[in-house]
Amino acid sequence: MTTPDTAPNFDKLRIVLVETSHPGNIGAAARAMKNMGLTRLVLVNPQAKAWPAREAVAMAASALDVLDGVVVAPTLEAAIAGCHLVIGTSARLRNMPVQLLDPVAAAARIEGVRATQDVALVFGREISGLSNEELHLCHYHVHIPVNPDYTSLNLAAAVMVLCYELRKAALQAGPVLAASALDWDQLPATVAELDRYLAHLEQVLIQIEFLDPNNPRQLLRRLRRLYQRIQPDRMEVNILRGILTATETALAKREQRNT
Ligand code: SAH
Image (cartoon, rainbow, N blue to C red; front, side, top):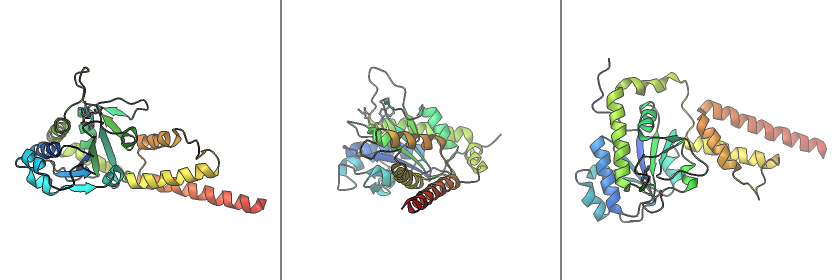
């Protein structure tokens, strides 16, 4: 039996709040994080520009250190670029779903990699949540199972539910689960690495006339979702990019022959 990890290290885990309107919610989220042992808070384009805002400080109570460490990012893409795993939260189910997890399963997924991989847990706007496009940047969608007649939690309450599950998972698992991520020889590709591959893939798909840039439909979103489901590692993404480069070279040679 392993000794429970009473002070789990969440240094590689960032909580990302997208375009929060009420600074009080940011303060309350910081407090929930500190209660559960998390420290890294990233704000994407918050409405309050003067930082830290007065209401945030008031609601943070003794979590001012979390507010002091806040990083402000201009876009969600920038906030998660270096992450290997991104988990979005939303009260709403979507037409084109992203793999769904409940909070316990999400916490277990994060627990398996938190020692070795940069992970983001993303929360949406108070009024409109995360857009489809933003949710599709995530590997998983976490839905907190609430009263179906009123599914939308207060932002900081949603942060608390997830942070509590993370702490419970860490206390139960001890160091064992966290170490399992080391079984794989390569780290999964980061968001930025996969983005570069997808941009390259888009170019080649246009060249071979598989993708019509004037009528792209949902092709790229579906391909992104496919790769996010597989979660290729760095080496695999490099191989895939190598195949694209070889395709481009072959196309160029064929064109030369034909002229
Ligand atoms: N009306 C918005 C709700 C926003 S609540 C919507 O339809 O999405 C603010 C944020 O809290 C959400 O973007 C999400 O990150 C989180 N949240 C609220 N309720 C949730 C639930 N039941 N499951 C998962 N996340 C939830």
